[in-house]
View 1 (cartoon, rainbow, N blue to C red):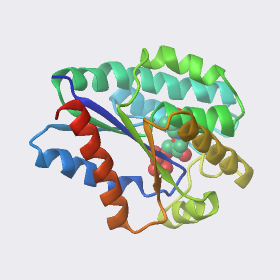
View 2 (view 1 turned 90 degrees about the vertical axis):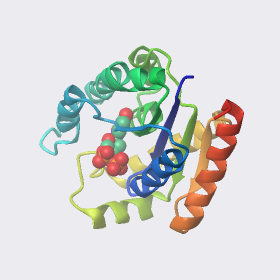
View 3 (view 1 turned 180 degrees about the vertical axis):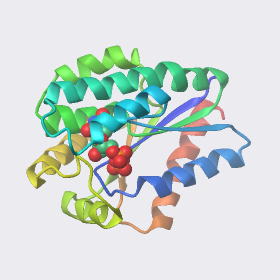
View 4 (view 1 turned 60 degrees about the vertical axis):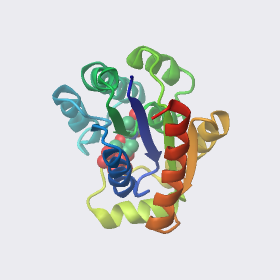
Length: 209
Ligand code: TYD
């Protein structure tokens, strides 16, 4: 049996980490092996690329360079970590994936269709079985991210950038409603968990897990 590939998405400060822990718990209770990864990052090479991407000193980075480094980090993560785990039958949970590049680089940086094209090569066509979009208002998200600590290069972008990112996520969810589940990130932690668990039960039923 092949495993599952689950991704979490959302603007900054959407509360993904707490729900990732809940998803891990859901599958461990079923006796399944869970592999956790994140983007940018996830493998030693990808983590080096992550440091370049998030470094506040790299303010002169061109949007195309940025998009390609995110894709490069992803190509390594897919081939070294994600695909082998899925082949073993494990459950892979990835904190952000291609939808982040579409939201932040295609919409936020306004690079358009080139982003999906480059990422088709980066992923070899791998698409998540389910994606949770933690929907949070950009203002509230930025306030939460600022409270949590220092802001990285992307988080420091102006509000109109964050509104474009939000619009990107909205369109992704609209275009692919079977895969992308919208989660109200302003709801209580327990309600969010229950909503996510319902979606996962349905996914498991459909896959015979
Ligand atoms: P991270 O600290 O992981 O953010 P978060 O905790 O909000 O997930 O930093 C990742 C940042 O990189 C985040 O601001 C979103 C951005 N990003 C992109 O712009 N494109 C991408 O393809 C990915 C994966 C992330």
